[in-house]
Length: 163
Ligand code: SF4
Image 1 (cartoon, protein in one colour):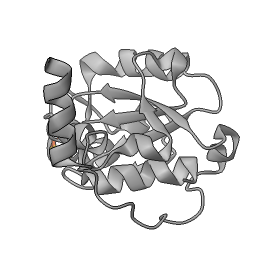
Image 2: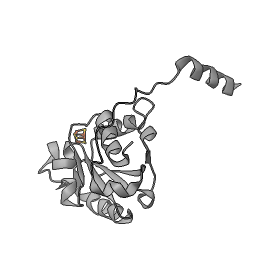
Image 3: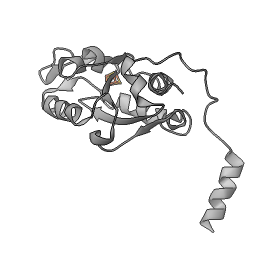
Image 4: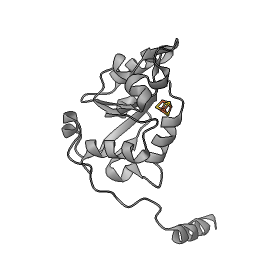
């Protein structure tokens, strides 16, 4: 019975995803050429306020639907091609971030998501902050904004998949 209720709701609501916007342009990173049209994405919160996490959640939700462009969130860095890192890197998270980075096989792409990840943002100089993501691991793409919009996150991922 529950299946019929779900089916009826799907019929009534229809597709909620935004229309597919034009592709933002060629591959945004030379390493992306090896990815062959899809990316497995591991997210690392290195000390975020969680604002960026909400936007990443939306980027993979039903409206922005990042998966339709070949990007998929995975639970392990060993399955990932791309790290999405949010927040300033706190002292506690510097070593876990470095270990996560080392667990991703080559070619690994690191995206600094949000102003805090790009330059430590509001938290620069704080006692518990080691610095920006680039102070701990090499960053390939900066995605500024506080927080960046889901559409910008999806556009960055499309720059890796080319879809
Ligand atoms: S960039 Fe803005 S939303 Fe993202 S972690 Fe920093 S303060 Fe929070």
